[in-house]
Image (cartoon, rainbow, N blue to C red):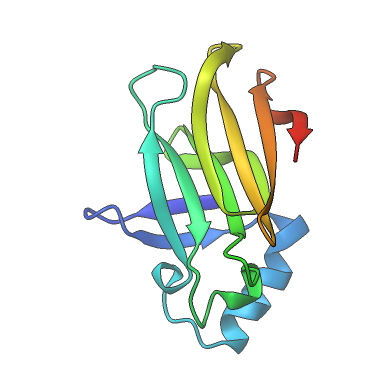
Amino acid sequence: MWITRDANAKVTCIRFDREFGEYTNDFIKHTQIESCDELFEIQSQIDLNYDGNQELIVRVKNSQKGMFFCGATGNCSTWILSKNGKTYKVILDAGSIEEIKSIKGKSRGFQNISSRYDSGAMNHYIGIYHFNGKKYQLKKCSE
């Protein structure tokens, strides 16, 4: 996935790699999405490895147009992107989750991450991710 932003930090363009791209591009055309900003939002920015560059937490908007990528309980597709030259690269594809945040502890210079998935009826799953030098990997899960 690649992302660009305008001066106001709005998502102006997101392009996906071949694995996910054709499907997403067809979806965007079919639902008449004019701008990537209608579908995606930068939920937050955080410097996870203390290098002075903000990593981006990008999430699908839970809206009429984004509902295909979001579940009934508020779980939406979420990624963490890290600046790589002039573009960004995905360092975590968290899937459809409700919340993501940094937690105590570091792995290979990056803060550890936790995600929460809401499965309804007061059931939540928590995932803990550690950085392996290239991307985040799930280390443990709990209910």
